[in-house]
Image (cartoon, rainbow, N blue to C red; front, side, top):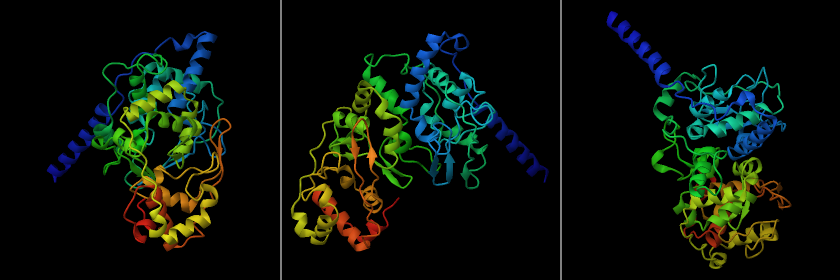
Length: 424
């Protein structure tokens, strides 16, 4: 009995030691400037810089409330073990981050730990933000503190047991949280776009843009698989596709198309849908053309793209049922040959959703439709209606196979079970 008690005591002491020593915040570099004594001009310039950092970091997409009060929190992020809600990051004294210092913000961004010592769920992507430059962090802090406070309480996470026990995050961090780089790297506010576009693109993609948080598969502990970086995964019921250079090239993407897609939400390969549309709406459409090109070149690595799949009119005879459904439901907008209409409907030749091996996104678009959307400037896309109540399982299967075979480059049809039970 004494041995058991002793082992339990030892395990408890070891756990506390690990929690305090190995998973707390590490070194915090000094502030990039004297933030307490900024001139009015310097403060204005830092606010402008901080807003751009916030845009590039896509803060609003997760922290915007449902009633449109930016940064007041409440956006749900679904995970296999529960739901995490974006928190209130306005300078509210009671419910926000008014008491945060710039050091406190850096600690949360890089280590995922609040000033009170609470470990944040990694839905807050500190595993990517871990390499943010101190100058970018400080500019972001100045901008956040200049926003209007919203006195709205953050909604607590709704996680299943044992994931609702936040102290366990300390052990997750011990294994999976990366350390900040040994040498400070140049961020957006301490470099110029033409200094080294490839490094700026890497920083925008890997750090602020945290693209791998959605586009990299997860392991059993819901940590990113480092050996499958950017190889795509299903998240929140939609396919976040493979965005490796080879994967993008295989689907016909080049750097110019990528930059256009990120800047406008529209490209020859399709239009932004699902969780990517908020990324456009709150982040990428505000980025400079130079930064969009830096991102696009970093992602594509200038790998020559493949030609779009050959248009296959023989699919009309091979799948006459799908063809008739297409003519009745789709051709009025997309054209009898899938040519589309500018700002009305996308062309289907080389459409990314039709090319994916996993038909999940294509099935969801047909079932759920796409609301009319303002993209950028005067660019808009009309509504695509939902056909979930129009198509039975056999009809849906026929239409999905027709689109994939005629324009997506697929030969073998999918069985109805593969379409109806699409993994998501």
